[in-house]
Amino acid sequence: MSKSIPKPHNSGYVLALAFCDYLKDKTGTPKAIMASQQAMASHGISYVYLHSVKKTLFRDDQMLFCEFGVTVDGVEAGVFSIAQVCEALCSWQKSGFSLLELHIHHLLYVSLEKVSELLKVTGKTPVRAFLHDYYLCCTSYNLQNRSGFCDSSRLGDAPCEKCPHFSNSLRVESKIQGLFDSIENLRFVAPSTYTKNRFLSFRPQYEGLVDVIPHQKLLGEYLGNRRPLNAGERIRVAFLGMPRKTKGWETWLRLVSAVDEQEYEFFVFNSSNDMYPGMNKRFVEFDEKHPNAMTDSLRECEIAIVVMWPSCPETYSYTCMESYSANAYTISSACAGNVADFVVEHGSGLVLNNEEELIGLFRDKSRLIREVNRFRSGKPGPLDLVDSDEIVDLLPCSSVGLNTGVHMHTRLIERVLLEVLNARS
Image 1 (cartoon, rainbow, N blue to C red):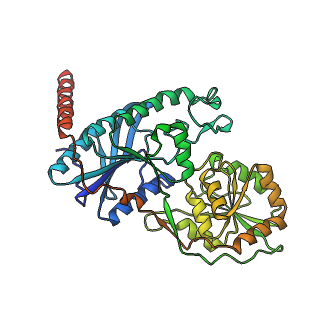
Image 2 (cartoon, rainbow, N blue to C red):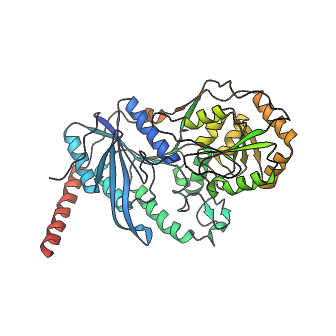
Image 3 (tube, rainbow, N blue to C red):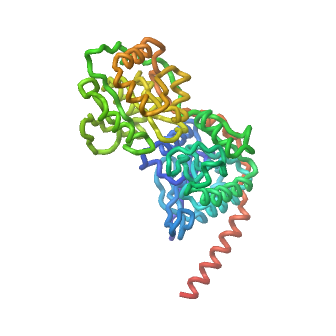
């Protein structure tokens, strides 16, 4: 007897999907999905999550198969076909369970054909697509070409002409648009105004359909780590996250090698076990019980400055908020997206135009101390970073029901094909 997907704990539930396993992955998107599941649970709403388990052939959209790892209310249930998922949804409806919304967190590495099958069953159920990066604009989801950040506003702009991602983007984005066109009740969620505006430049037809919901709420005031710096001390400077080019690691390395190590003490905070020459390493990993582990570690180490120099615009930066919550002064590049906007809005750091300005600032220690001390004498950062639950307020009060007839027809075709394959073998 084949296994079945366990029922949700609550009668009302949200169905969500993406490519990542939020129980295991430790990057920004899984963290946001985990926070969404916890927000639903705190309001008595169940969360059924699907992440793709696939085998590709040559290209990510040429899949030999695509099934889904299923997690129900934070507990892993196993791997199931889309037909089994649809069968479970229909069975739950007969048992009195109500699907409130379908949340599409990401379509990268997910079979659009399988999603289309799911949409046929969910019918008129409201759908929300989340903008964790720029994949709904371009398959180069960080908007990077061979030269770095392309700064395109739509597919077909001048930077697209020689971009290796352009032809693939035209093909995939048209398929995504076809999927969206089949949805009767579709809205989008952006974690920042910057992300919303960038998305609408690519898909202006969705003007008025994008809700901005930051991942976190900033509460209270943290009064630690605010003493004035003095010229005689080594200033503690940090890089947060894994050593990736898109996060500014190469710029960080050049900065470390360009300034006097007697004047600065450099730190790296991430979840790897790697060590880095000339730098202090702090192991930091968030989980369900310790969502603000980075903030706690920054406060403990009394970090004065965090350098955030991504090579592409951030949609939402957890590390930017964590730095602010530790009263660490943030130095950002002008193309850092949400990071640069946040720093300017809150006066929590400095936005520079290029790497030469960055290294020049660190070589002028007296100026840097003045900037940090001015920040520390002003409004402090938040005491607590709390995951937002605003998405819960947007959920409908009741379900519109499923298209169970569509599912029964799909299952019949599946059984016939299975019988034919068995007969041939």
